[in-house]
Image (cartoon, rainbow, N blue to C red; front, side, top):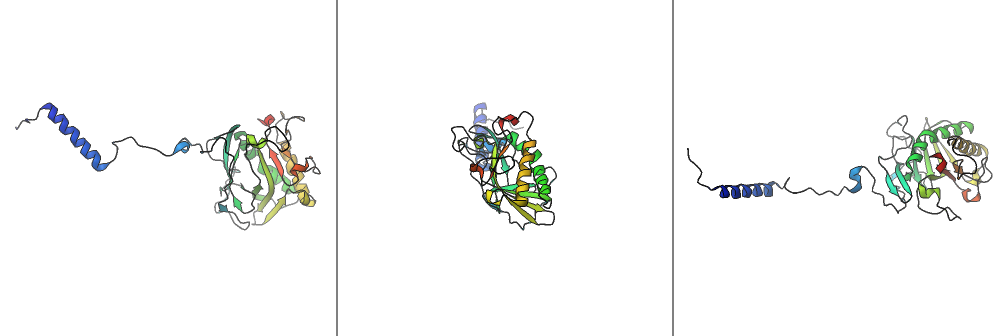
Length: 261
């Protein structure tokens, strides 16, 4: 047997040199990994706390389009996992473009979808009650029963005061959606468009409008009583069954008041 004539110190230096050479050649696992995932790594959308949601209108949704994926029972609105930190509380991202969802929507468009931000409790309430109220309103207006619906809206979360007031709007708490139009899709591919503008408040449209708002009011918990802020859950035009004001002559302000949770 041939014994090594290298001293222990020389052996250590030689071993370290070999390790350094191997690391340099393969360039893997020898330095701490860096990450640019940001908040997405924890499942939270990276939404600035003081920046209002900017509508995304990237995916076309023509009226004649047939869903590529059948609607999943129970998946009414699609919300991304996790929550965002907004200026006045938490928010969840509504993915208005999810093809498997029964309810989709987009900012100021009948044909393009986008995202929105709503309070987590509002998100849960929307999933439990919104589409049922659409079905009930459609039946009362003698429309064909919808299998899905597209919401044209004028915004969800935005950190601002209510118009003509020094108090924050429900939009500032991500507790309101301004609904401009309902586009109902029946099982045969037909569509029914229901405007919420005062000029269209007549006939079947008026029946749908009043029925939907009444249904939404009934979905509010018993903790919501007259005199509390937005206790009925919506504000509309003055001539409608539940009343309203002229600031809402062209949309339904659909809210989830503080009394609701």
